[in-house]
Every structure is written in C-alpha cells, then in structure tokens.
Length: 427
Image 1 (cartoon, rainbow, N blue to C red):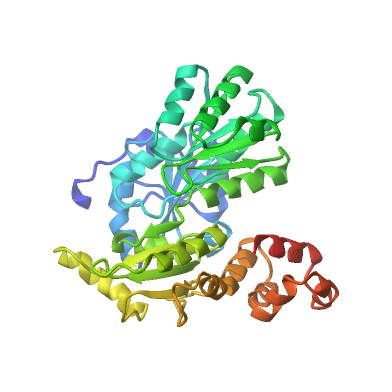
Image 2: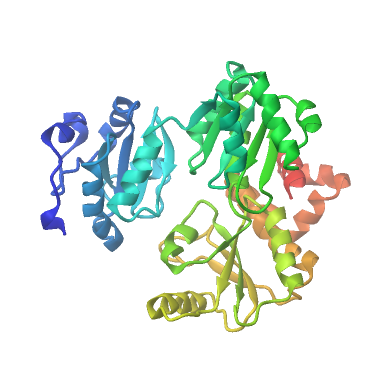
C-alpha cells in the first residue's frame, strides 16, 4: 500500500516553514519542538492536522500511509511529531496514547480523533473541522427542520445574534472537540418560534425559557432528547458551558465494541463502569434501572458501558470480546465492575478493576460503589493535586463532604473550601 501512495504536490510540502523539520518517506513534514508553535500559528486559519506517533508503535505504522493519503485531499496543512524524539512537546499537548491525531485551528486544539484509522475518515473529520462550527438560522422553515430532525447533536443558543452572549457561544462552539452542530437564531421572532416548537414537543416550556437569560438547548436523538442550561458570557461561564455540552452530549450508556477498545479505554474519561450481560438471558429491569441511575448521577465523570457476551457468527469479533472479558475477569453474567484507568502507565497499562459483589438491583448500593471512583475522576478532571484527588476518593471523606458541620475539619485537612463546595454540589 505504501508503494502506491500518491505523493503530495511540492507546494503542499512547502506549506509549512522550512524550519519545521525534515520530510518523511510518505511526504509529510515532521515538526520539532522548536517549530511546532510557529506552524500552529502560521496555519491558524485553514487549520493544522498533526499525527503524533511513535516509531515502534505498530498502530502508528499502519496509520502512516492512510494519514499521508489524507494529507493530499484536505485543505488544512499536515504534519507529524515523533513523540519519542519530542517528549516535552508531546507532554505539553497531553499526548498519552499513540497514534494521536490533533486538529489545531486559531491556535488551539479543536478536535482529537483517536478513532480515525483510514484516509477517508481522516479527510471527513478534517473537512468538518476546517469549517466554522456554528451557523445562524434565518427562516421559520430552518427552525422547523431543526426540531423535526433526529440526526446528530445540535446545540441551540436562545440569545440575540449580535450580543456578547452570542460571541461567547461562538467561542464555545470553536472550543468543543466533539462533533456537534451549533446554531444561533436571527432575531427575537425566530427565538419565540423556537420556544413555541420546543413547548409543542414538550421539550422545554417557553415560560421557563423566558425566565432565564442566555438559555441553551441541546437536542439529541437519545436519552433525554433535550437538555437545557443557562450560561454567563464570562471566560469561566464559557468554560462551564463547553464542559456541559461535552458531558451531556454523551449517551448515558454506550455499547462496547472491540474495534473501539483503544478509543474507549484511552479516551478522556478514565473511569469506566461496566455492566456485562448475556443477551440470551437479559438482566431484570431493576438491574438496568440501577445502572442507568448511576449513569445519570455520575455523567461526565464515569463512562458507563454495556458489554455483551459473545453472540453471532463473527468469530474474530467474538474472540476479541472474549479477550476483553478475560482481562476484566468476567466469568458470569450479569457482572458489574469499575475499570479505573486514572493510574495506568507503561508498567500497568490495564489500570485496575474492582468488581461489585452486592445486589445489582439495589440502586443505592450501585451508586455508592461508584461514588469514590467518581470523586477521583472529578478531582483529576479539575486539575487538583494527587493528594487532594486521593483524599476526595476516600469514603470517609465523602461522609465529611456531605456534612456541613465538618467544614472546619475539612479545612484542617488542607482542602480548599471552594473545592469542597464543588464536590458537595456535584457528588
């Protein structure tokens, strides 16, 4: 396949500054730590697609010709970074798994696509990210089409188009990494029509919407179908809204597919609650409800996965699934466990697995089992130090957090009151 790969035109190879480094045998320029920031800045408008790779990684080797082919078809600039030679640069970009594709636009990462393994998928992603992430609806028909459609995730801002809040919403649209469509409405008449449509479909009442400034609707074809939030146009408010969109757009429970094992266990959510079931003998509704209840409570902190015992005639698929079940030590169905990848490293790439041995139908027990893992995920997500993260994971500390009378003791332990208030609110 490599021998038949089309070489990029010379003009594309010269699209990055000469200081960017050498060109590899696939015709893609290799960036160095000294030239990376300059390349991101130079290609801020059209975007820069970067493949972070390790020469010893077989997945990286397999991706290389696909990435080179994709680079001949996209308008964005393309480059590669050898993480073994540029360890400091890789660390600064939070690269922990290889290969890792990053798309940079306007000086920041706007998407990370670890699941793209062929040229067509890479091209489709790059072309989508090169476009503006938001658009403005200008007609009643466009609003009606929005509410009638069921495909994809759509984020609708109920704010004046030229307001400070609209500008903040555009910043959020550019910053959110996951695929979603961001929409604004051209004027108050269309906003009122959108609220009428929402009320008609019992998604969101116009009275509630009009009672709050800067409302956002998140429409999706699964789970709650719609979520709503209000936001502030400040920098902190934009960050909070972006996190809310990324958290709420994820399905509560995702099915496990062996083809995506690296993306699941190497993704941004490092704690995974897994319910392994046998499709031939489905679990009782109470077990399913208890699992979904925990998924709702710990959304954005713990990824909830339904894993099914092998079935069908695809033997390669079943063998991959059996391998994963053996790794997780699943010997009976149903089984409920938490796989914690927060401490995974080269010496312990599989993290740790903790099995639940209580009543799977007891919603409170299932939730309580997850609580310390969710606390740890929350702490690490917010950038707290390891000591604080470990402290928040402790079940005894969780009891303290839930009791306002213990505030003074918590402060003696060295945990800032603001973090405690946040943990109490979120957990």
